[in-house]
Image (tube, rainbow, N blue to C red; front, side, top):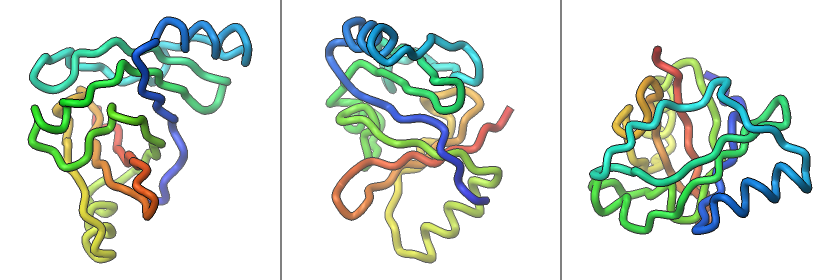
Amino acid sequence: MKPKLHHINLSTDKVEEMDAFYRDILGLKRTEEDVPALRMDEEVYAGDVTFLTDGDIHLHIARKDVAAGFRTGQLVNPVLEGHVAYRVSDIEAFKAHLDIQDIPFSNWGDSAVAGWHQVYFYDPEGNVIEVHERCL
């Protein structure tokens, strides 16, 4: 169940400009490897996203969507200010761990991403953390 850093998500209204910056200035490359299958559902999230990598860790640049949490009835909105994401091999064990630690979380399941069971919660400073299991 040990979480492994998978990606950092930056939310922006300038997806194309940010994509170009991270490719041109930092040398990141676009990737299709191990990227989520977004459902593109207007009731969940249908924003523009680009997927970049340094060869190890992904950078997801997503269109900011301040209403995603309201539309889905979720406490934590992962595309408001961005988030850091970790992958685990057993999401149910991780959810039990959060419950034991008394950490409230939003269980998005695979409603936004086909094949990824996602939960989101806040760190003590209010930063959004995603933990997901690939369930293909």
